[in-house]
Length: 426
Image 1 (cartoon, rainbow, N blue to C red):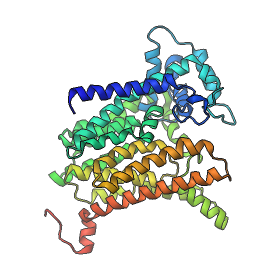
Image 2: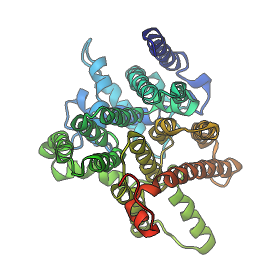
Image 3: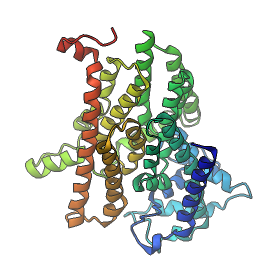
Image 4: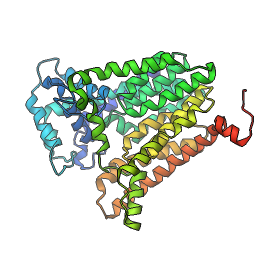
């Protein structure tokens, strides 16, 4: 991409973010939040309030997010606080709304936080900060797909663009892509550092480390201990403030919160729960089934470390397969996870049907949330449609996973031995 085109792309992304935030703050007075969704941004504003309050994260101000994410949530306050001290009374108003029960639709045109100047400025800055992460993610995809560079623009589909504007998942998506790019340039230790940053932004990025180590082992026939050391030391350095000031309670706080979450979005686990409850009167929402679900999320790691991962393309495919399986078997899912898989799918796209699947997955994600999520009522027609759309999306993810798996299983050493085939490249 030429410098001129790069500048034009960045300018358009900035203009789009500013237009969405300032031009349509009340979503044309619709309750759906189809442009600006304030639900998670309100939570981010509260979790990042440790900075203006001068409190300690996790103990002074609770957070269910990893360390890097929790620190990042304070960045808009840092930027907004340059002209002068912030009015913490306005933050208290946000806290009361987030803590209200029963929860209220945060996108109602009459919602009080839409008149909270500090929060609206926070939301504006937060969304604007997501732009460079999307921009550089696209550049990396563009660089890693020299044969079909234009596919990088699939990251601008409605679902991906919506969740880039309203969530922070584009940050770990970017860090994952950056780690892959660095590995392709033989910058192993720096890629391990980036994975550690990503892991403490969104935990799923830990899946990249065994894939990267397998790639190194396949080529060098030895374990890359420096990569492991860099990953561990970076994690310890980022966790140390929490350990020192919050102790074990502060360290475990985000994990305890996440493990105790209820079903706010559908998942394969949730569909199985409905099937057994309605069909047989059985409740599988217990620690045993949740534990099995967790094990299945990481089930690709043993397959990967016993396989020949000898090219960057296989690194990308194993990463994609690991992330897809992690999402498919997750007890709790989120629609913004489209940002985790979309760039990886683009990097592995091989034909028109595959590209059509990427587009369909994105459109289904946007239809699931925000459209049907805000229209659904339990037992109503939109609720059934909501579950149907998720089911189709889940089936599509399964098809992608099976397709990638079939292309990789032939390199698995256990499979080769059991099938009696000769190992390629031996």
